[in-house]
Length: 95
Ligand SMILES: [Zn+2]
Image 1 (cartoon, rainbow, N blue to C red):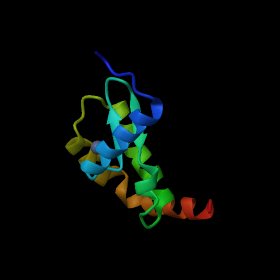
Image 2 (image 1 turned 60 degrees about the vertical axis):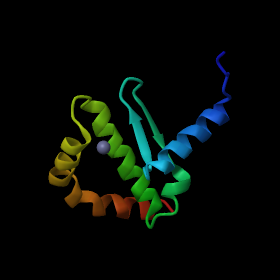
Image 3 (image 1 turned 90 degrees about the horizontal axis):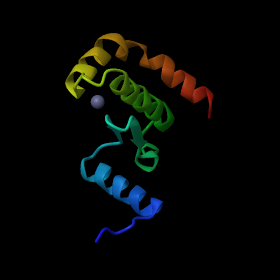
């Protein structure tokens, strides 16, 4: 017999899954769905900038479903990392 889960129960399961894996976000390739752990992210220094950076990272995954995390990371280091200070300045301006 299948148990019907409430949306909150599903959200709690996702949150505890992310925290067990020490992850701030997850991208589900088949669904095209990204989940961010804002509670965890907000504990970070520059939490908003970090959240935007995480969304951008998951966006790259969504645009390149055949790239594994390692390939995304390597592309990210080459093309994006040197520009992250602009994103941090943007996020600070929003506070
Ligand atoms: Zn990744």
